[in-house]
Length: 333
Ligand SMILES: [Zn+2]
Image 1: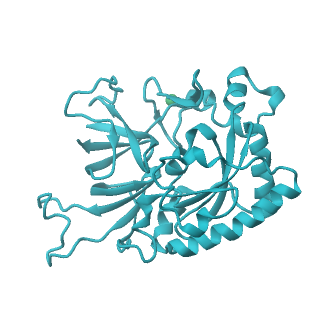
Image 2: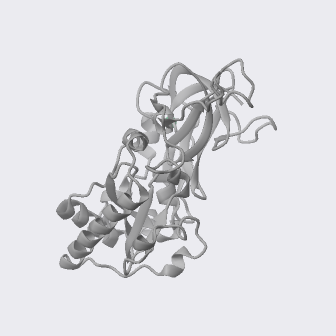
């Protein structure tokens, strides 16, 4: 079956890769799938695929009338030479507008999108790489799950997207904290992971600096309400020292815990590249676009194929599934 990954979305603390299926002629299939077809890839699944060498447009992000974004699929799943979007879809994409449009130039939909509560956060990845970011408050932890953050601190709340953007810029410029971390780096970070305690210490130090910057710049915002985290997976298990920083909310992605230093499952196989050739994998878990996988051997059955001939468990690899986005694959579903 032909298809390609168009986006990743949060599901509890894990991620789901959305798969768009194509007919044998390369035409996009309707949303109604036959019972043996599926349009997601998720943890626990086995996937067997090869890359056809073609690329397909992933469509464009547009403001949804009820708030947030929706992905409008590329009508013809147009073949492209590079990148992830065809020219018309790139032009129609509205996701970039939220970063740099001033309030007075915002369209009504953009205004509505940004004119709701937002929060500022610090996120740390497995090797200690840190970033500052923003999210609409209604998304709670979804943004963090999609980004594959390991541990986060929500440091301040703001009435709207313009204020939070200003705070983010100040923290990034004065504190030297990056606003983006590349997906390849995130996947690789699990090869040299820190322990939960070390990550927690780093976040505590950074949070103190960030608070100082925000106060100095008059951009402190308000304290996040702990009620926002009631019943959310990952908030109860965050390290105690982290949850005790006044005026912040801490979260840990439980999916990633096993793969950190001193965790129970080291990533002992290294990093796999997926952007060419043939692959047969078991997706053990998914954190953002980082997938933890084991290789399946062709002739063996499911029960045995995760064991080496000596009976040992086969190595665990990390992959940047994000790099596969837009690549056409022929996949066994
Ligand atoms: Zn397109």
